[in-house]
Amino acid sequence: MKQILTACVLLVGMATAMAQGPSIALDKDVHDYGTITQGADGGCQFTVTNDGTEPLIMSRCKGSCGCTVPKCDKDPIMPGATSVINVRYDTKRIGPINKSVTITSNASNEPTKVIRIKGKVEAADAGNTGGAPVKPTSVGAPVNKE
Image (cartoon, rainbow, N blue to C red; front, side, top):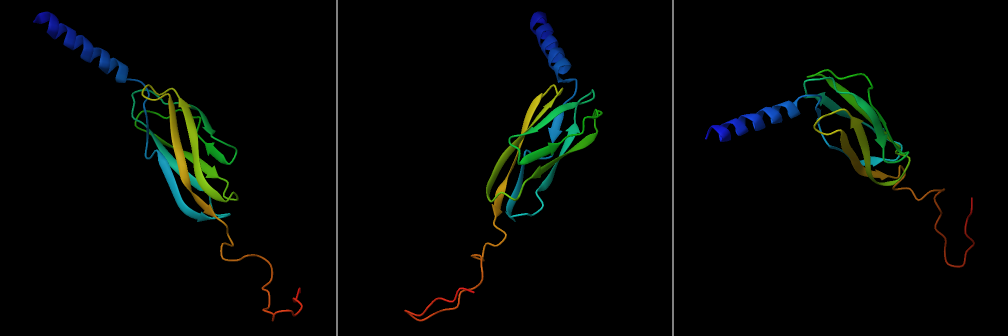
């Protein structure tokens, strides 16, 4: 019985030791833009908290393509403190948004963390077909090309 109790105490001690160190936590894993207009502000933020016992250092933040640009603070995040990751998406591109940002850090819980952005960019002139309005004509009459 004493051996079982000793083994349990050792396992709990090892688990506690492994839980120490820097630990990354984010306020969200996905930012949903919803439907936005072409050229709209494509910026969003993710708040990072260090839930660990040692400073957290985000050594790299990388977007999945050139249209997704993240900015991470390289300064250490002290235990209990927060930092912000700013992400900018190029809203000149029309269509669905489904991109990711990979965060590399010294976190003991998730040294590589992936966050996502999603949504849809609609053309700014969605109701306009372009050009000047065409005047209606009767059949066989020349078209007015002003």
